Amino acid sequence: LDPRPIGIFDSGLGGLTVARAVRQALPRERIVYFGDTARIPYGNKSPQTVIRFSRQIARFLGRQRVKFLVVACNTASSWALESLRREAGVPVLGVIEPGAHAAVEVTRNGRIGIIGTEGTVASGAYPRAVRSLRPGARVRMQACPLFVPLVEEGKVSGPVTDLVAREYLRPLLRDRIDTLVLGCTHYPLLKAALQRLVGRHVRIIDSAEETARVLKWSLEQMSLLSKGRGGERFYVSDLSAKFRDHAQRFLGRPIRRVTRVSIERY
Amino acid sequence: LDPRPIGIFDSGLGGLTVARAVRQALPRERIVYFGDTARIPYGNKSPQTVIRFSRQIARFLGRQRVKFLVVACNTASSWALESLRREAGVPVLGVIEPGAHAAVEVTRNGRIGIIGTEGTVASGAYPRAVRSLRPGARVRMQACPLFVPLVEEGKVSGPVTDLVAREYLRPLLRDRIDTLVLGCTHYPLLKAALQRLVGRHVRIIDSAEETARVLKWSLEQMSLLSKGRGGERFYVSDLSAKFRDHAQRFLGRPIRRVTRVSIERY
Image (tube, rainbow over all chains, first blue to last red; front, side):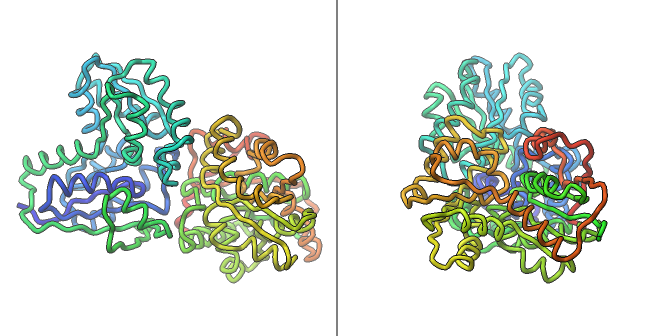
């Protein structure tokens, strides 16, 4: 038994979908969440910068004495996992492997579409993860750089979103994928619009729930589960006027208390 | 005569349009440009964060011994000008006042539309600047948060951009503006698309050239002009794969040398 909290971070607030899934799967665990809202987005920045930012956040969460680090950001999971694992001193779980695992379980025709940021696509982390689980799978990736700003603006449906989504998804549909992985924590808010577009025969995979499942399994294996009353603390690097609104959209309920952190000091 | 360089900064590479205009207006001046590409965008972040980032950059440019600081970013000009003027120890020019000045000169019916980021709109800096020059002017502002990501993705024309632009500009056109200020350094790349949309009777004002004009005038007034051979140095906080491509789009020619700076240390 280990009462220390679980650390979860993202480039912004999208990772709250992971925090929500972890809370549901592990209600007795304490969660410390950090969202790098001052430096969001990570998706179009260089690997060096994404790694540097991720290490600062891991050091901050280390100070909060977390027992496990969950990298809820797909771009950070793509580039920074190795370096975090070397330094963190606690187990580190990204969202790529759980998403890839779920896709391989679900697909029938072996044709898997994965959408994400430019960074996530450029890293090749998803195809590597899928092929290590099922060498014959056919993976088609597509960067969707306008999805994050659309979600941030609350445009989760409507003509602009449909037009943009149709353009991005066309090559995947032409490949006759039967499984679509949402490889960015912002995308679950677009799920309804995307499902309409791809049709009911394509299964959409949101890695948040799968990540929570793998986390639970890992905590059990390592005897790191807590039997406490649970609880959450939220930290961000920027508190904008829209913060509460955005946070509620991803978390599914209001955030009461949040603390701003000067993350570049870590 | 003063051979020290002019410092110009922006949240990213959009301010290169200002650097280009300054170079044309003042070919004998040396320019030091800083683009905060690791933390872009500023437009939807809190005033506190925009001010903190701007002060770090001003300190970095201070170390480069600049004689004049040009804040090419509209959002930073909206929030940080006062605090930079208190600290910089050199004259500080933003892009808001030059843009407002040009708008007041150009308008015939006194109805001025201004588009910018959410931060720029929330600050009220443009309406204040316009009304101080012409109290009776009618200013209508519109935040266009999707324009920066569209430009960053190279979507400077096409159906998505047209659809988004039409939605943003509708209230301005309903107000029968005859002048439209591009209140963000990314927007000049959308000028052709916007001009088609608003029609030829609406004059579009790009504050880059106006800012260069005011800068020249100020340097003359303060006897700060240089008689050197000119020159440029470029610094950024993140060097992504797309950097050269983006930089060339804004500067109008390739950047040969660029240096990455850990700006959070300043």
